[in-house]
Amino acid sequence: MERETRTLKALAMKGAMNSYLPLTTTELGELLEVSQQTASNRILKLLDDDLVVRKMGTRSQKLKLTKKGMDTLKKEYADLHTLFSSQNTVKLVGKVAAGLGEGEYYIKQDGYQRQFKTKLGFVPFQGTLNLKVKAEEAEKISLAPEKSFINIDGFKTKGRSFGTVKCLSASISDLDCAIVIPKRSHYSDVIEVLAEFQLRKTLNLKDGDVVELVVHLD
Image (tube, rainbow, N blue to C red; front, side, top):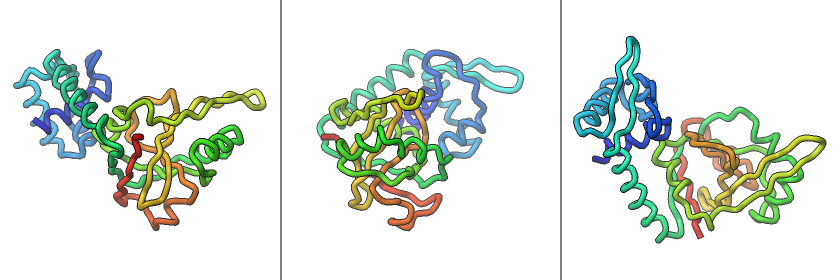
C-alpha cells in the first residue's frame, strides 16, 4: 500500500483531488522517479483498488482521486500528523540542484536581512542551497506544527512590495540553517535553504549530491 499511497500523494499534489488531471504515464514516471512501465502499472493498481478514476483522451489520460483515494490520504495525513506532533525533529532528504539565482536578490534586501539576524540568529549568505525533494519529503514541511514556523514580515521599499516569508529552523551536518518558504508558494519539489555560510562551498557539495536536512520542530 505504500507505493499506492505515494502515487496518490503525487497526483494530489498536482491537483487531482479537485479536478481531472491530464497526465501521461511518462510524466508520472518522472514525478515518481520510476520507469514509464512502472508508472503505468501503478495507475492500473489504483484503478483496480477504486482509488482513482480515469478519463481517456486521444493522446492522454485524465486522473482524479475517488472518495476512497481521498480517505486513504486523509488517514495517512492523520497518522503522520500524530507522529510529527510527538517529535522535536524530522529529517528531510534531497538532492542538491541548481537554482535560478533569484534567492540572492530577495535575501540581500535589508528588510529581510534585519529580521533574519534577529529571528534566525544569523545573517545569511546571499544565496540559497536548493534541494530537490520527492513529494513525500516536501509534505513533511506542511505537517510541521504551526508553532515551529518563524514569520519574516513583508515590507515595502522604493515602491516595491516584498512578501511575508516563513522559515523553519534546521541544520545540515551540524551547521545551523533554515528552510525559507514564501507565504504565497504552493507545493514545490525544491526546498530553499538559508545559512550563514555558502553551504555548497563549506560542505563541498555539487549538483546531485544527497543531503540530509534536520528540521527542528520545537
